[in-house]
Length: 106
Image (cartoon, rainbow, N blue to C red):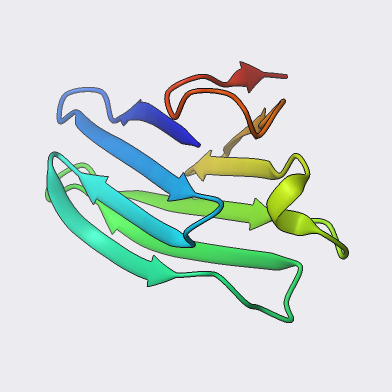
């Protein structure tokens, strides 16, 4: 699953999220610079939240949540949500067979 979004008005930044559901590699980049690198293959938690601040003069609090099902999570759709200061957006992966860049916004 991969998605990107822009944050900011005068001072814009691009946030890129990528998660390989089968290998467990997760990465978050801001303006091309890696901010978070994580390995999520076996986890007891159903929700993982990543929080960080973007910007220098125009700062925005960013939160990205990755939610998984309890059983056979690697083979089932997962839900992703991101918030930039006060706006929530939800993304749901529709199928494991999708290419890494494909996604459905709901």
